[in-house]
Image 1 (spheres, rainbow, N blue to C red):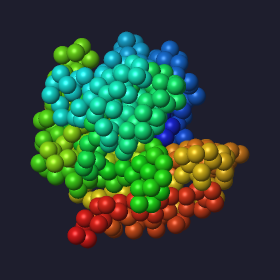
Image 2: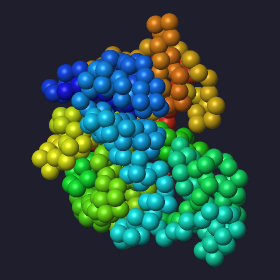
Image 3: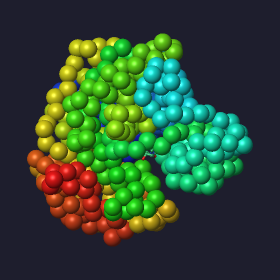
Length: 423
Ligand code: AMP
Ligand code: GLY
């Protein structure tokens, strides 16, 4: 099979590493890619925002299958353009990607199909949103409707904080994404991420993970794209997984199909495990970053046929085998992230790939033949172990072998699960 991978982050490096191992792979390209991805695929210099250019590249190289990593091209309709050109693609249509692209859309699907989630209302002006907040009281959650790079959500512990967040949204702090606001009940519990493939009819559960969104140790400081993750998430017991499938995923597949948006691709369900059971916080329509890295370290099966089955309606004919080991990844970021940071700082040395783990590249580039950091999140240092504590110790041993003066990381990834292991 001739495959094109779209994206350039740590998630896509992990996808490239795993897809390249497939015996079915004949030719492998990635756009725009990064130096880590370049170890597994030929980088193609195409503008991924230009869908006609992506389709033309696929025709030229006789690409059979396109795997889309990030959400923005999906929400912009890249999968539709490829399918219209007769090219198979992993990832939902723009219509189905509204599950991530519009929080209000998702809440309406939840309401119509009885999917457990926080009670909510949608607003297109500040006075009505504020009146609702005053009536409901705090804690309460304010969300910009559209894609806001993970920054459009305020968990307000006071009414004043909620009112200020409403003003921020309508005053344009999140651009067009904030033109509509969802106000949602606060859910109390432990968060977990659940990943599940779908071909529009069938679901195939993959695995669970937990992210660390705050920049600082002990879950302090501002939110980020994710500073580290591990899989599996102990809070997702077999019972919670089967309830999530039955109460959340299966009704979503049905609801999306009935609404005219059959969903093919991956559901990344952000869950709150409350006293009542799993409740949906949000859907993403792509692998998590860095959750993908830990998932794929544990996947024993060939990834390529699993993703391809989503595109041609044959997901009921494949299965996924998982290692029982724990995988844990530590994100190394440029000092200053998630605020401003220097770009182009040199990464003097990385540990060689080996059985100790794997360093995935996110925001890196080659400049005059030398590796430099170009992004906020730059490296994902990943290891496996029999326990979270063992995987953590191995990952940090690897972190300590990275020579990058401008890098930093949290030193406590996995703390919640380790506390649980130590009982
Ligand atoms: P989201 O972008 O929707 O994932 O929200 C970002 C983060 O805000 C989530 O990971 C949760 O930690 C928190 N959050 C979102 N919605 C709620 C809610 N209804 N109750 C409590 N926390 C929430
Ligand atoms: N790590 C969270 C995300 O990918 O959205």
